Image 1: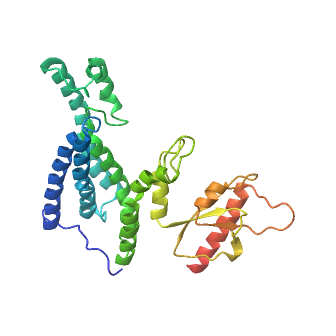
Image 2: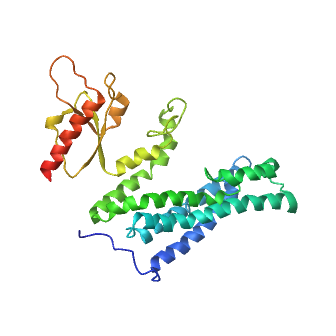
Length: 314
């Protein structure tokens, strides 16, 4: 397909000048952003210092995203096999993650107990006893601790490596115009943090005491899945008898689109909240007084109709 992005899979020893320059710039931005943190930490004591640190730091917070984007530039599209990619990339960071998750807590323990005691109010001696240190040595399998805060990047990078082969499969077939569209959608998502900030000002009170947005609630903290479903290009349809639903046999089917179908149970069907979140609704034509089918029958009918439509367009 024409108009694709240039393939960055250059020979291993070949350098890409602008990527090297961007890497150096990002390194300086990381240093500057951490220099702002002590000022931000003065929130309760010095409001002016806090505002200065927050304002200055906001200009350099792009540092880590720059490293993430450089990862994409250098590794996409993925040309190796899935197992080989995971073994090489995740295996490399896993060794570092395990090593430093063990070494850093031990260094903190030795330093704070045998070298010098910290006077910082942020350091609780009870968190650096031998018992607390042993606890940290195995709980890193769940998350980083205070001692290993810098390792948060490796947890994020492991997740990034897991999804890169999936992204790569689409990237290899995408045209430049499709990539521009995706970047436009991504640009819009940069406003989501501001939506979370302004939502309470506009009267949003959350649900069940949780102030999360766009699918985040007490029983679902993974709002990102809701975002990704839209970005992946799926048209989400509720299979339900609602106003405006298209009859299954008259549905305007797009063979190039990807569909996600939402089914409900036989009695209550798909909730109105779920219907409102969908891109549309489709209804199975029925005759008689009893308009209800169980989910297995509904699923079979709709999936067979979609299969026939796809096969006829092939």
